[in-house]
Length: 363
Image 1: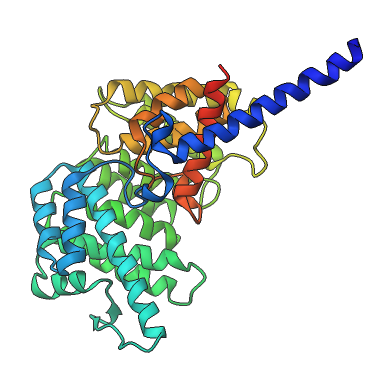
Image 2 (image 1 turned 135 degrees about the vertical axis):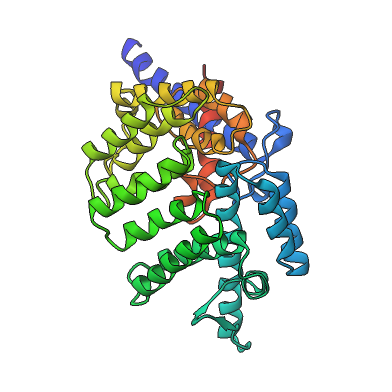
């Protein structure tokens, strides 16, 4: 009987855990299950968090194909550089998506989209924007980011370098149109990485960004890959970059969360063991991110990015109550790392949401 009990108890626990996992999956996909979470099919994959003005502009772009709502949005954003960077990225992503739809239509017999300046510009509204308002800095900034997205669609393409060179030209045009803005230089960070700029040249570009926006979280995230192992640096260089930024962060900054992104970038391929996520290095990075979120303004445009990655780490570290706390703040939008690296960001997110619920119910 004693031996039977040893076998039976783990079996019942596994059975209960499986039942709770199924209940968690239901709760993650059914807002009526008591958690108030958004169903998978309604998760917004475009944005990391809510931005009603941006969502309204995107809806108007889809409805009218008129570029003016986008231009007015960026003009109203002014020198809120974190928010402007996020909005430029999203508008460029919308244009890239529309171009992909146009290309799909062409493959099925439609007429080819018009070119501009020797290249394809995505979305009718972006092409018209650049044509009718060539001196609008918002249009140039969006165009430059769009070109980066086009190049990154296929880094093995023979056009990869050519598109990035064109993106650099548009970045410099955008910089002339708005001399004090860091946005064109932040976009150029991705260009410089893709074109394999020398470390000295990259450092010079980074100095230009920092002069204009020293505590810009989005800029630091854009710069980090260059110093990471997957590109031109190493884990040591990436850690040094993020820890230096975190240590020198001003009050109410999100920069103390930056080391968490460096840890994520350098995780081993096989990393399902929970003890890895309970190590001192990971715990310190998680604590830094949680501290940054407590200190930064609640409406910081980059806070959802930190929350999404924090959910991923907290679930893997089996810190389910803390994961649930973040999920309640960020649920509804999934356009952020790590979900955006997958083929189906909503499904990727929903799996972790279900794991958090199942784990929390066992506490």
